[in-house]
Length: 570
Image 1: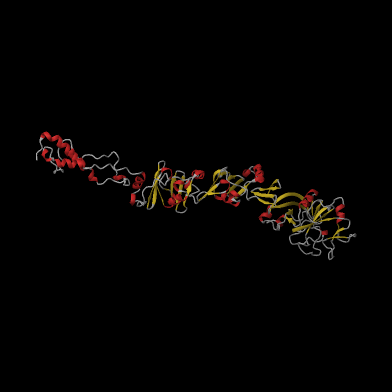
Image 2 (image 1 turned 120 degrees about the vertical axis):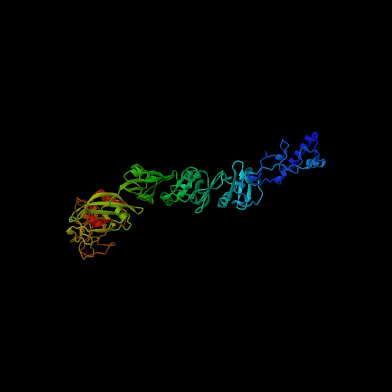
């Protein structure tokens, strides 16, 4: 059919309308808001006419069934009516952020799997939305964007209150890190997971301290617990390599290694040290860490030990680890109101507020097992030490026991038998030979002209005071009273009142007598500790002041170890 030229413009308009109406239908029905971004047009993608409506009016080679514009008769009234009645489809709605994220993760073919419910924008707090899938979920908020949660990390987040908890919404996807682990950031912190540790939260001041130590790549490694509340409003969190402690007054500080082990032995934050107030600090050959109640010190040769209170103050006065005492080698030990702490170069004592610094001497042999004669746990042990056989000159060292540790109270010059010491195991014999015995002996009795304040059972001497020296008599090597002075018996009153006042104050060594042993006749008797430092007939003689001080500090069962140095120490 031929179109009249005068009607060509109207026919062209009708043909264009017909072609435009047929264009959107080629794409099928409009996509839903949950379709993947690859099939979704933007809101500006309005339908356009096909190439057959080109301004030139030249028909497309594929549109052979469409009449040419030169045949107006081919456009019928029915055709135009049909074209006018064909509806135009609206542009597809854009994908939601959750659906966009889902599509980016592979949709149903990705790890999330198929959708199991429509998006929910009512339950999540703060105007957020969530989409649930077979293997996880995607959460969105305007502030955080859309991010998936799944597996152990999602379970930990849910246990912490999910989006309504302290962590809030996720702000990243899971991020792979070392040893097969992952982390995921949230508005209020993070969750870490590794095969060895499981999933745990990380947030607040504890997280800041964790960051300062290198996250999971530092010595702490991965967290192994969430934060755990403890006393005074504090918390701790454990890690593979230690812990982080936080409290309102101290802030957050790490705790690890041998220092942490030493702190644990004191009772952690519930012990006398309290919370840490610093991290570990390097110093000469070691490290220390400060706490509310003191410090912990560590070096390779000494290990970790606490330092606190009055003993710490005295140690500070010596120069801490740089002074003569060096590092602590033991924790502080206390018994009643008395405390002691050992250091590399000696001990510090705190006795009811009185302090002292004591370099090591022979007393340390009692602590280390180098004394050949045992202490039996006596409250004090004293040494009378000659440097060679045949010498009557000796050094007397008083060692005090505090909480099971012996320390040197004082040392003084002394004298022993004029002939020196007999070897170990050899009896001193009669006093006329003037030998002193070698060995360790208890002290359970004191004597003199008046009790100077000793706790030992005290015998006040009188003119009839005697000490038995006649073998095979009923009084051998024991105190008795008799007006006569017979044979080898000692007149104790005479020796107490003569000008040299030997027995003005004294104590009995239980050599060759109970409770240390039975009495062996003629093996030796009257081995005393007494005043007057002249050489003796077998006793130990001290300056008056030292003897009185010894008595005032003595308790029944204290011991005296005496002999040549080589016979006493290994």
